[in-house]
Length: 398
Image 1 (cartoon, rainbow, N blue to C red):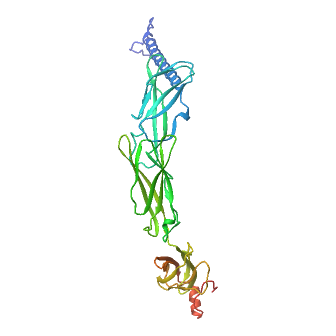
Image 2 (cartoon, helix red, strand yellow; image 1 turned 135 degrees about the horizontal axis):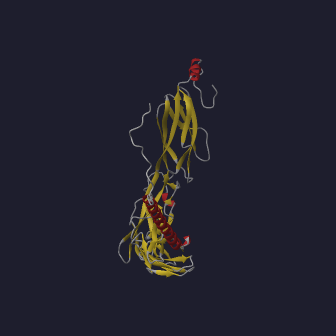
Image 3 (tube, one colour; image 1 turned 135 degrees about the vertical axis):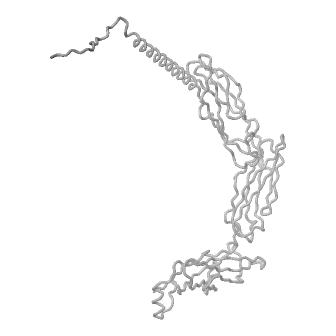
């Protein structure tokens, strides 16, 4: 028996002319949008490349972007040659600067093709100055031209960095006075140093601030071609300087002729004052030694100035240390023997202090020599003492 479905059979929809119209319209719309995007992007890229080509054609050589080292002043003029390396005329509508201390003349200009135009920068180098400056400071500012494009609109050039070093109103050469270790306590005034102080035009009324550690004399030396004045300051250590390292300053004071503002210059002065009599070696180092051993070392005292002196006292600090004059003589000075019994574990520092009277019977000085060793409790020491041989001495093999 066969059965037939009661459901009517579905027939395929009949295609009608124009039935795919909505899909085609959608594709056309997408194509139109993509075309607009690509066209706009091409125009933007082309315009940016065109503007970049225009602004990139303006060049200033590196040698004109560093004015070197100049004195601090209110109106410092510097010429800036701007080259147009294109075959088209370029117009700079105006300039911008990263600091209000820059004035540019002319404020706008046209640079002919493959030609160079010069603008003058007037810099106020006092605007960012610190009154306490004693060393040159770095000046670095941007100069940015705005270039007018072919369509009349302007675009900023990437700019040029102008830099240099600005000296304060007063300059010392050398900037620091270093006496080294050549100052003798007995006669510090044997040494003196001369510093040249240069004052820029308009700086007047130079003077020196008193300093009890030095005597300083100021005198005008010469007038330089640029209008600045050169002075000489002679610095001599005072007899009141104490033994050891010192660091101070000489203060030069002046004022600006026009503004009346103060101009100060600090010249650092340093050195080392030592006694006329030195010890050689300046320190006795025995190194690692077994407890109970005895070390001995010779040292000499001599006068750097060749003057006679007398040792009027010897004082030792520390356990087991002794110092006495040696029977050995030397034409260069007095010989002493330092004897140390090593009685303490670990690093130990002792000293010998000599009291010395100078040749004039007035000057009394002190020379100190450190004595160091590292004590240890060694088996060699124990066996030697058990054998009754006593302690090991310097230069002796156990």
